[in-house]
Length: 172
Image (cartoon, rainbow, N blue to C red; front, side, top):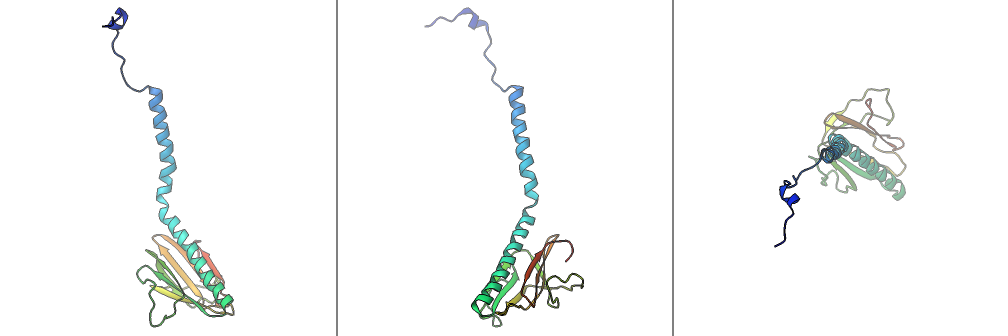
């Protein structure tokens, strides 16, 4: 047996635990992580909506370019999640399709140009809209209103030039 010194015998065992500095450091790290994560949680729907808008604009522009380059009319079906992108007897040769889940659509076919902000638009709710782009550069035209919760956006398609304009400003 090894002898135990007298000074060790009388001292109490060391208490396990954390110092105040260590606790404050861990709490500070948790607070910083929460400050970075929490603001990003609330805007997921808005960012998803914005990404879907960019995708819709890209799909419409692709259909427009495809019509001009190929010399054939290009059709794209824009639909809400309920309608889907199934071919119908009216649309047997559907070339492009864009579907969004949870977004409601409304369409104003009387809008002659995409940038006409001076006139009042009357949007009619719909499940899907078929947009045609012609080889000469024109299109069937109109304005789409897309709504997800409290967020709205508009897509204008100029009937003369086929130009696509996506906007999520407060005024259509």
